[in-house]
Length: 415
Image (cartoon, rainbow, N blue to C red; front, side):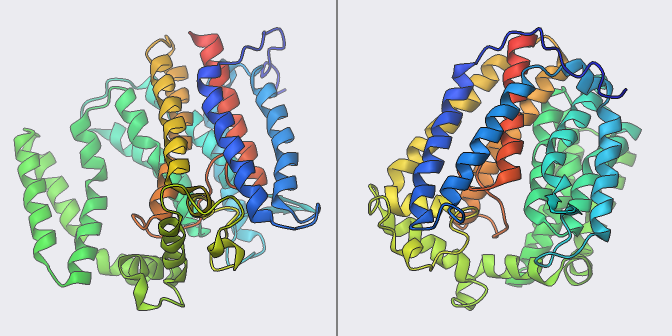
């Protein structure tokens, strides 16, 4: 039986308060602001009361994760990866809901495989990187890394779900660094992204020299790094071709709503009451709160329904308006404490696989928070992305609880 050996119920549960305390603070802030965004909603419709139910589910998940054997995750990592692949493919034959095919529907239940797939994705990559540490040559290994790393987020992107796809990709660089992968090779892997971005900026602002400057800098990097001539030539040609394919990607691969997000990210005031509306209202919310905020429940952007999706994607904007910049400061302080203690534990873990798992799980939570803050403040284009333990969301809260539960498990049993 495939689940045999998954749990070890003889273990003693020990709470690592250094990482749990910051998470409890985030949960507290989440309920505080959800009590405001829920307003006078009934018990059935209130996101505040619904989140209490999910808090209990998350607590059960956290406790269950303490008994999971990490070795089991290692042994079955590739089977889990293949299962994730088929589940993501299965979404494409499911009904379209709100313009997307992200859910597998079984009777009254809706299951979003990309949400829990984040955990499987990290489990698989952690095994592959731990089995192939200190790979420092541009070889077939790079192709395998790219395939394993790109296939799930590509399937998620096509659903379409750009925010979750970005989250998948965001954990790759930390995992590569921690597995002693050559930093120069990591840069070669992400260079095509910069090539596409510079072409897009060059076309939008009508300054082609932006792309030329980037390619010159990239060429100098290749020679300075003393790569073999074939590596220099192949990477330069690949980046030129990928960069020049920018218009093709823009016109034929990106959906219209993806193009709109980029265009109105660069200039939301083109349509202040249309496609630039969300970004502008978020800025107004953040700016109007000042240092100390207007007071809990007194946010006008939220109360007058100017701010969309205030319970999930833009909950940080509500927090900033009602409790001010000081609340954001405390939120970031809690996140930094969480990251600091994770790094402290990472250097003490003897198992390469467990350390990569812990880094991947914590990176996912950290990047969720940083990317969401960047979106609501205008540093990144708007895409649907909630804040861990603060935003309302059932499956998302459960996923985050599993991540923290497994992190606590690893620290308890691998140090």
